[in-house]
Length: 376
Ligand code: PLP
Image (cartoon, rainbow, N blue to C red; front, side, top):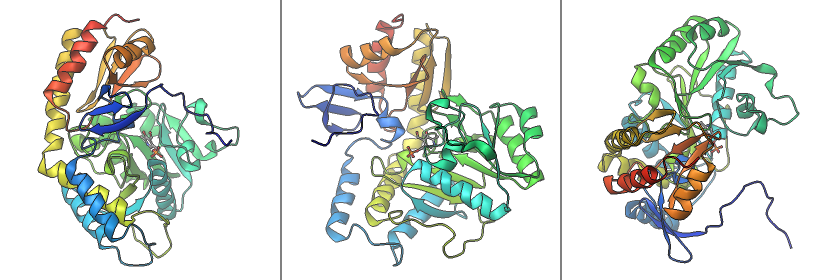
């Protein structure tokens, strides 16, 4: 019998349905979802508007290739441009975060004619060749040498960035808030220095907003706190609330030509419908504002509980670092308190709840955390 290739350590839990910030398993046990499957569930599970929009679209047409007009793509581009504050950027659609970064790096290389990439330590950009090349995490680098064109600089080190970005640099790729790397927030000064250095050298500034984007930080993109603009912004995860879709927003300075980028599935009818529904819900329900409010509420509560080594993040992207491995703490939260959380490294709890999370759900987490705060 064929079996699955066993690459994921799995909890013995099988969610069979979900609503808002909750999941239920086959026994009817309810779980609070503070992780959204790595920041994917942005507007909440099975939101009625999302379900209706996708169901209606399924009855019309789900796919045709990018050789015909698909007006849903234009609608998505307009709504995304407006809500994100980039009405003059262009949108290229693909299917995942790694693919978005791959296309961003490719576009930067076409545009500059250069090959050298600057990335930052502890970054994660995905698992395709270009994306893997921009990570220094040995766990995901195969012996094949992807890294020959990438220089890793320390995160948030302005002097190193000024020295390391040169006229040879094709692109600088950075996560505004490092997710897998441990919820480290790029400072405003760092973003501004990167922007200025890229202007001086002609390098392309790529904001990898795959995890920290789409309203999670309290702005549509976390680098918008710093007042700068990136040349290319990569997105995925929360964009489709579970429907696979990714994309890059591209500054007007890039020139599109036929065949420059391409994909079979990217921008299909169903994916666009999911992404449009997400943006409509985000706007109609003020979810970015909610991310600010609930993020502050959670941070305040966590501060009052204490017991941690460091508390980092912005909006609803929160890292609580302890001076002990958090495995037992997370197991207690999951099996005793029925709450899903995430992890970064060994010692940091990573919270990435839906942007629609409410006070009641935050309180449930804070209560469980206060009962467990010394769970070393
Ligand atoms: N970039 C960042 C910042 C991510 O966190 C991830 C995934 O975790 C990716 C890129 C890759 O996205 P995907 O898994 O959709 O390819």
